[in-house]
Image (cartoon, rainbow, N blue to C red; front, top):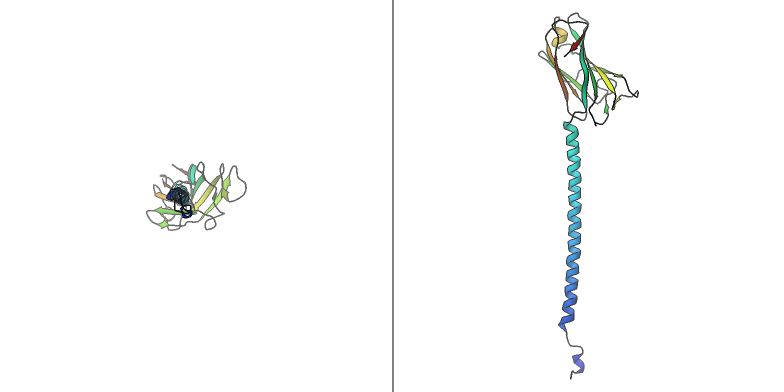
Length: 196
């Protein structure tokens, strides 16, 4: 027969089950918090990686392209080339590009190179043709003609017989790849020439 103190004696079995339940619950809570932190960090990292990839694609894909011919116009002195005309449009799926009204005003920079000079920022003006909404932003289905002034020290404008002269023009939008093109003047300088 148990004494009165036998009722209050320790019974390890019940406390062992309760302690195990508490420890198991603590492990589950810690695991849940840890998984939340890991998943949150993973989502943040993947969002950052996605943004980086998107920006990289924007920088390497050209936002503008040539559409149509490149035209050279005779300069003020006979036998020289004074202007190069290039028609641009957006490449498929690209965001609109702020052209501006003229060089220094827009978000594009035009450079000129030939055997005699390199000018990293030549002057130019723009004229929208066809569909346009009367702003200075090149959008889908719009075309703009850049009238690029040949630098005064360029081979095309200093040589009074600027025949068979190679030159390179680079159009650099604020976002997107550079659009370069190289042309050669024809064997005869006319008032207007289509450079192929």
